[in-house]
Amino acid sequence: MSNKATLDAILSLSKRKGFVFQSSEIYGGLNGCWDYGPLGVELMRNIKDAWWKSMTYRRDIVGLDASILMHPRTWEASGHIQQFSDPMIDNKTSKARYRADNLIEEHIERLIKKNKTGDAATITARLAAAESNEDLHSIIIDAEIKDPVSGTTDWTEVRNFNLMFKTFVGPTDDSSNAVFLRPETAQGIFVNFKNVMESARMKPPFGIAQIGKSFRNEINTKNFLFRVREFEQMEMQFFVKPGEEQEWYEYWRQERWNWFLQMGIKAESLQRKPHQKMAHYATAAEDIEYAFPFGWGEIEGIHSRTDFDLNKHQEFSGKKLEYVDTATKDRFTPYVIETAAGATRTFMALLCDAYSEEEVANADGGSETRTVLRFKPELAPTTVAVFPLVNKDGMPEFAEKLFDDLRKEFRTEYDTSGAIGRRYRRQDEVGTPFCVTIDGESLSDSTVTIRYRDSMEQERVNIDALVSLIHRRLKP
Ligand code: ATP
Image (tube, rainbow, N blue to C red; front, side, top):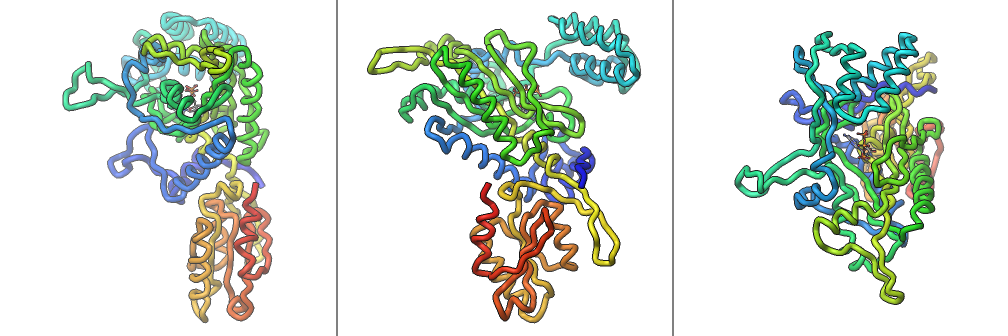
């Protein structure tokens, strides 16, 4: 068995099987936007449900669903208007636009491949020390980095490019009506801190969890779902008493790491990356990274953010965002531990991690390649597939009745076309953990064959035992 999850293999399977399609494909597509097909929506829902359960089926976290459009002052308070930008540079010949830091990082990688480790180390040190757009520009000019498209070094200055999408409320495109599509879900939680705390009668330490769409006008969208312009986040802000933040930061680092393992991701595909450079208000920050086919990439960030966000919103709104203990009269602005995961990147990580190709014996005595998505059974988009062995002798009627019964409990598919072996392969490719075949005997003794995706083992079971057997196997 081998994990051959190249980006091409994942892309092709996604489209062929209906996990993910390019957005507005018939019009040539829209960069950085993707649509989830019938299997993709199921997988995505299962991921979000698993996260939601792990976060909110506990006594100290409650949920929220804030709107995507928020009062524009939110983004002034959070610093997004001033700082949520990437340094970009344009090539005057090709008109191609790049993130200046990415251009330099890619150049460093090329130098390392060519064994020019001395040059790579010098540029790496300059990049780490760079504090301004001018510094980035000098590195690009000094290193004579060429535009991959035109091959020239004909560069503009480095300028900041704000990543927020702007739109207007009401009928006039007037700057006083400008609002932004949220670039993160977190601010919806901060501005509702008091509403939630009071209505749900929570007191620190407690958390607010939210799943929702976020939008970033990324300069370079790339690597399929990894860097897109519209994506889903699963964020949780945990409010604690000042002084208790380190202990809770450690707790959430561990919890979130364990969650990815519980989702079935292999430990060797994950790594922790503590932040070297941190925002001035943060006291600790770490990313959880996944080994994507193109290299390591962040799937979640865990940040200890002090009282920065609540303080900023107090300052800009003039409203107190404190916790007051009615008995002791103790009052404080809570410190925040944030867990910020991408549902979209988790989706892609799970697809890559589950993908495997293996050589198996076929019916002719030879061998063939079996592609399998080894999802954890409860995450699989389809749980059970039902097949009549042949389309006659009462088998289809019996199988359809079973299909109707199973559909009340599980996401179930029905397939009548081709040899049984082919039908198994089809389900393996989309990760269905259980296939049930109805044959001639089933009609007389009410037994069916259940076949397991990973071991390919088959078992004969009574039809009455099927639902409980599958439920048992779905338990984590
Ligand atoms: P990056 O450095 O890769 O741009 P980030 O540090 O800006 O990511 P955060 O602001 O911490 O990301 O957002 C939290 C999570 O949201 C990320 O771990 C990632 O899973 C997801 N995310 C952020 N930007 C994107 C994007 N453009 N496309 C898909 N997912 C994203």
